[in-house]
Length: 544
Image 1 (cartoon, rainbow, N blue to C red):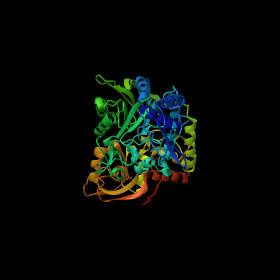
Image 2: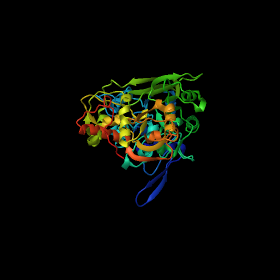
Image 3: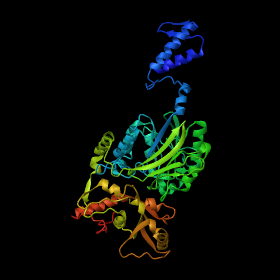
Image 4: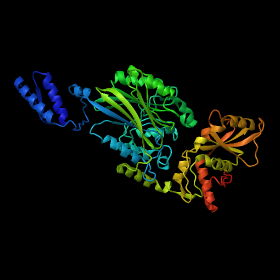
């Protein structure tokens, strides 16, 4: 408040030949005029006060908002030369716990802190690309709150939206941005250019089209978008209220707003979209081609879990730096922009490998440990002992499919390959709930349908490479339009427009992951260790 009062008085004195001084007490008020010589004396005094007052002092007021012209400081900022560090984490998938003291979010935080502490400048931007929550028990059991708690302590500047933010219903994520501290609250914004409600121009609730930050006097605009083609990768019941509009058009529009209306010096684009073999994708190249007030200065990718850091060449412009840092916190994306006179002179990008980094931020680790302990009884619930070591998820497809087929007594059971995310079974170790979430973190329910043999065979001939199936012993799927079979399929696949579900089906309400757990426990009850490869046939009996 002291700075505000001094600056207001100073500006009033400079602009007037006379100074009107109002003094009020609880009973009376009086007004007096001072001479110009007194004014000069006051100006001198106030100038001295301002010079000796710290501008880092916090100014707060509940009743007034003062906007002051700070142009007298801009010449120094205009000439400032520094390197802006843009750090990014994509596709974390709830992987905040350490594995053998490595690859936890506290390890990422330690590296981020080191970059922040390289000098005294405020020269770091920290961005979460998307797909930050779904994937691990510590995050899934409280729908992302554990991740938010850690991210809040790391001072993120923004977060984008990924397709897996819809897995629990997008409202489970937007609640962190609704201003209600009772349900958990992020201290950074959710930035979204192109996810709208159906048949409207209303942006997803609690998201904002762009965000502006200041770094060393440079005004930086942040924009983000979700790839339109990812609409089909979301469970229909979770996405049907929304539309993903053209990513390029809306990013371009918001970049223009940031440059022309908001007078931003730099624009950073974050997209949950990327390449599978390189960063030279159609979208990245299109964004690199934008010029003038549409130009993007740095680009962050996600979604494909592919790692790259590079530059896209631009004619007569600084090349566009692009990064995607694999997934699950295995790398940190780094883009460096060399800036002078608020303009980018040079750009570079790199990935920092986090797989072997043992250093970690104790403050962040304490937050993770606290959340883990709150959920420990559930996370560490033990079901059996692993009888074999398995690290390739494709090896457990027959077992997973058999669990579904046996539980529903189906003629054939289907799931998409991506329904199994990974596996890390070690012979002799206990199998806990957290290990099952590594295999299947999704809450996919099982549908039971009657489908003709002809439609089943047509589907198998066209889509077998992206899905797996298990057929009941003794059953042959005949290529007949009149012979029908009982089909079990997870809802994610069953509701795809290319799956021949038809109208004759029911939703059993059984969750695929829970069926797997029942089989593992059944083996324990039979005094059998869990061997999903060498003994892939499920021991379950019909549940429905």
